[in-house]
Structure formats: C-alpha cells, structure tokens
Amino acid sequence: MGDHVHVRLSQGLSVSDEGELIEHSRCRCGATFTKVFNADGGGPERPSRS
Ligand SMILES: [Zn+2]
Image (tube, rainbow, N blue to C red):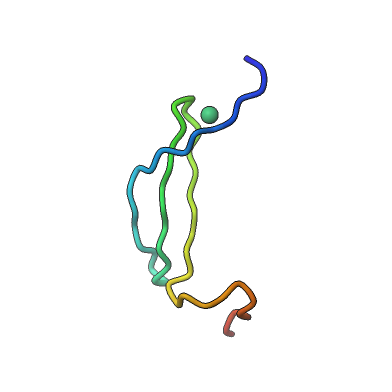
C-alpha cells in the first residue's frame, strides 16, 4: 500500500446531454476519473451562462 500516484489511462470519450465532452480515465488500481470539457470552448475566465 502506501502512497500511490494514479495513472490515468484514457478509456474513451462521451458527450453529456448538455453537450459537454467527458473523458473517462482509469488507473490500474481500479480508480476511475472523469474530466469534463466545456463544449463551448471558452477560456478559463469565461463566466457560465444562465
Ligand atoms: Zn491508482
């Protein structure tokens, strides 16, 4: 056991109902991750629309 740095292996991409691109990743230890990309492609400073 001990400290473990997850290695995120890409498991593919999907798109949410809101049009966001979601990347699924998984470490060999079994941990899973998702990373969401805003499909609008705006900059990090861009405020969300309401
Ligand atoms: Zn891991």
